[in-house]
Length: 158
Image (cartoon, rainbow, N blue to C red; front, side, top):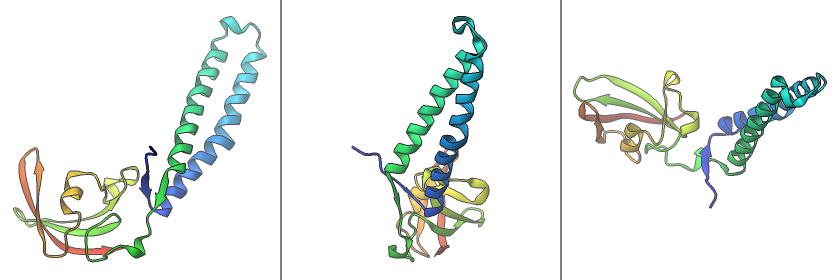
């Protein structure tokens, strides 16, 4: 069964650019390293050749995995999603009910999560707890420090 993952168009484009870079830049660079090492003589005791061949193997594995990700990728059409509910690609402002701290997060696929940009994985505990909720709904998150209670203050799409 295919391992389907959901992406924004931006996320899928990044994967495609990464794959293109590996194929058009890294693959020829490693091939050149192998050729240069081969020209140095006896391959049985040539550490440079062995290292280049190992790098080539690892690169081919990376390329293969990226190709599989791209084949199984699906782009989410945000225009068909309920804008009032917290869903994938929603921007949600939540309030911690214990200390009244406001936080705003965008829910994204695991591969696009970046806490510095306030993008959290849709599979994270806090995102999972708020999925399907609307403005004004309250929810709890099981955290290492105990149960944290939150309220959805706003839901929007970027």
